[in-house]
Amino acid sequence: MAKALWGARCGKSARRVLNGETSTRGHAGSVRSPLRKQRPRRGSAKATASSLVSTDQNVPTHRFEKRALADGEKETNTVLHFEPNPPEPMIVACLWSHWSGKEGPDLDSFAAITDEPPPEIAETGHERCIISLQPNNVTEWLEPQRVSASRLAEILSDRTQVVYEHRKAA
Image (cartoon, rainbow, N blue to C red; front, side, top):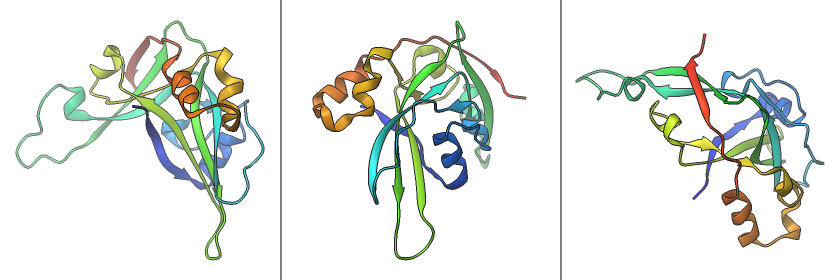
């Protein structure tokens, strides 16, 4: 079952990603979204897709080092840079929403959809991986009201198979 990555990363960073700019947040620094749609009406969620070339992700250091936490040790993170091999842009399945309320500022939220990682990512200690859509499925993904829920699940299952390389991020 697909999960969500970057759950409710909101505000300026998400807005920059959705508008196709480079985010200021390290974990989404290389996401660009040329496939953006109109903003949805108040309080509705919308499917979107972003082009991803590479990404930096936090991995618990003890899992990356393939060991248990020592007694009294606090969990820390190691930032890893993941890149597809061969390097090429991927179309990442995403959801986003714009919320307006009576109190407080408007809220933009963004989530890339993830699933179980392939072996080369799992061996780093990371527990999820983004779903890269097949190019022929993008139109249906961006217009979910025109397809059934089962077709959307098929689109997420019919993903591009990507092999990743990784290194510690600088």
